[in-house]
Amino acid sequence: MSAKEDVAHERAPGGPPSRRVQLLDAAIRVLAAHGLRGLTHRAVQQEAGLPHGSVTYYFKTRDQLVYGVIDRMTELERRQAGEVADELLRTMAVHPFRPDYPRIAELTHEWWSTSRDRQLARYEMQLAGTREPAIQEAMNRSAREFWKLTELVALATGSQDAANDGEVLLAFIDGMMFHFLVHAPENPKYLETGLRFAIESLRAAGDAVA
Image (cartoon, rainbow, N blue to C red):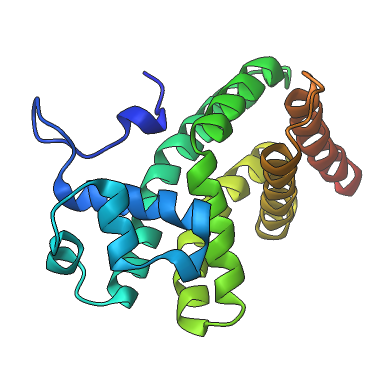
């Protein structure tokens, strides 16, 4: 089953998302709409539609709320990015080397389309990290998980320096994501072309070194 954001909430068996998760998901929406300055206990409480004092019960300070949001974004991203990476690695393992780019593009489109608020909130946090070292450290810690995924993809292309190539691949994909979210490209082949270019370029570089 797809890891769409609307079914990715933590739930008790047969029940709704926990109140803490409801608050964190509301905080992500507030971040996406109003930026970090707009992330207040009151704004999150109103967005979540929960009683007065709900946010303070789980997050005594704004810093606790901020780091809770980073952890929640990482958790959700892990599910969707992991699904795409797993499918890509599975198709790359077939010989001859023939990744299923249309399928990977389809999964990527679903991932980015269903997580727009989360991605915008992530960019807000990344920008805030340039001014607040503690946020930058937390965001870097989160990013390391995804560097490992792209490092595995780089290894599968035959990279001779997977750590470096994985970081470059992640930066390339992040740039594609930013363009997708901000400019909404009309070209239906945008994702497939970009992903093919990224993977085949890495493979060509690995072949050249070998």
